[in-house]
Image 1 (cartoon, helix red, strand yellow):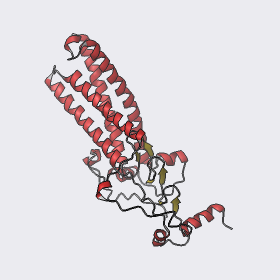
Image 2: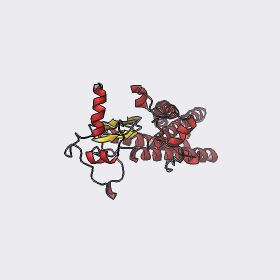
Image 3: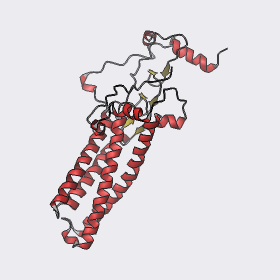
Image 4: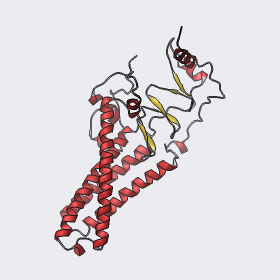
Amino acid sequence: MKSPAHRTRDIERQAGYLKREHCTPPPPRTGSDTMWFIRDSCGIVCGIITWLLVFYAEFVVVFVMLLPAKNVAYSLFNGVLFNGLAFLALASHAKAMCTDPGAVPKGNATKEFIESLQLKPGQVVYKCPKCCSIKPDRAHHCSVCKRCIKKMDHHCPWVNNCVGESNQKYFVLFTMYIALISFHALFMAAFHFVFCIEEDWAKCSNFSPPATVILLILLCFEGLLFLIFTAVMFGTQVHSICTDETGIEQLKKEERRWAKKSKWMNMKVVFGHPFSIAWLSPFATPDHGKADVYQYIV
């Protein structure tokens, strides 16, 4: 006699209970709505705050610490380096926010669609009752995105999106570049403090000494806070990629049902195959090549 769980799975496999009025296919996407964007007020506010904080750091670094230039080579090198990293950080943020993280087609759990899969006897498929879609292995439903996301790691309000199969690379790059510009800003702020203490405060900035001190202290606070936060997130994401286990899977202690791959192969699954400088570019879409994402144990 089958257990209740097995009976439930058989019902889901047969899909005879799925009514048309319960699961209707989503309308076809047109050119006007192909860009992925989550309309969540909290996430939108967090995304705007992220950009404003980066712009504030840009302002202090350029107009308080680098201009007017005391040393042209120092100002030019650090200006180009900081602005380049900041540009890559914002580009990575935009890509992480506006890239489909791996959403499962909504409303495809219809009787006709499941019958078209030509399932073998005993084969099981799962239906998400919230978005009415066939849920692949390792997919989880996000209550904010209101979709099932393949290999969902977590929903991040700072990028106003889920971190999943298709945009994890951009999220990792975002945390890395934010950590780098935070460290760079802290280094320059410390150097500028020393310079102003040894020289005349009135000559070390275009602003008054009190305004200069306040701007630098706020920058140091922002830089230290974001350096710690993004460095931890970056390390957590890299560890999750290498172990091929998402944050949700670790939290729920889910049983591994997929093939175990090497850490290097897991990195290629996310960043692309083969290894190249494109791994560091938010403008390069990962080419998985031989790094097959779906190497599950049958």
